Amino acid sequence: MGRGGRSAGGSSWARGVAIGALIALCAAPVSATVLIGACCQSGGGCAEVPELTCLDGGGQFVGGQCANIDCVRPLAAPMMSIIGLVAVFGVLTAFGAYHLFAVGRR
Image (cartoon, rainbow, N blue to C red; front, side, top):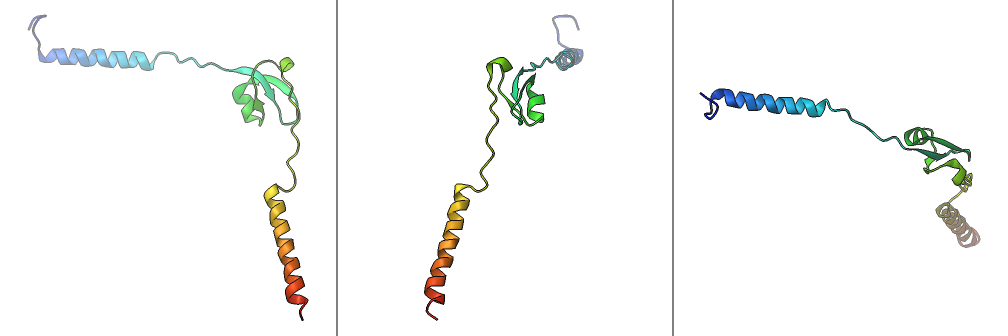
């Protein structure tokens, strides 16, 4: 058939165009933005590195420039948390009460 008419070849042409468009979209270059900035390292220092490098090294990515960032070395975690202190206090109180009332009456 001519240009105005439709034939079985028309659907194959549309399929070819769709496949060509899909290939063009998939082959398009993908660009990613790499954030480079201040990274507070676990030892308290600062380095200007990419964000993923900072996180992989155990640092905290802050961004900006190290000259403007104060990476204070974090304080060490306390040996016992508040919950641990309450638990120890409860156990010692219970042991003391048991000792006073149960053992003291013998």
